[in-house]
Amino acid sequence: MPPLWWCAAVAAAGYLGAIAMGRKGWYKVLPALSLAALVAPSSPLASAAFVACAAGDAFLLDKERYFLHGLGAFLVGHLLFVPALLMQRSGEPPVWLVVAIVAAALAVLAAVVPKLRGKLAVAVPIYALALAVMGIAAGAHGPVATGGALLFVVSDGLLAINRFARPLPRAELLILATYFSALLTLAAGILGAAA
Image 1 (cartoon, helix red, strand yellow):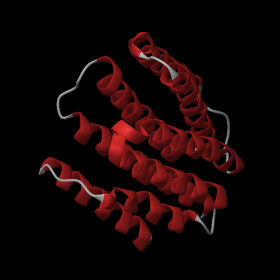
Image 2 (cartoon, rainbow, N blue to C red):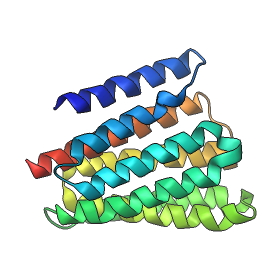
Image 3 (cartoon, one colour):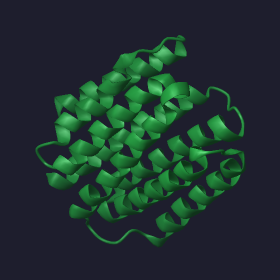
């Protein structure tokens, strides 16, 4: 993997370590920004998607005030990932993947939608749909991107359950570990397809 990928991995590991020690900081955005720079030559759309994820990370540093802004930024990221992944498609998404992603989305929505009020009652299902479409598009891209998309689904599912349904133990660490792994794996898949 190129040096920028390793920079993103180190930044992600550093941030996870900071969370484990009860500290956080603005450098949460560094993994996604590093990956945006890394994939830019081979996929400008994927680069823009990673920038949108970095914006989402920045907004979610203050989840109470800017949760909807963060959700919107990640929504834009998924909508950019879809054509980026489909432009490098290697086949059709496997049926098992489509079924698994749709089932996961429906299960999480069933757990959280009854607790949602106001704008969130509309925004969260729309976001879940975009995430599911991105996951299915990754399935047409190849196995590495598929793994990244599945990690994104797990991360966002944990986030939704923890925030809206019931608190999970060590939630932030689990959510961000799967999220950073998703970003790194998606970038590896995009780079592998471009090679």
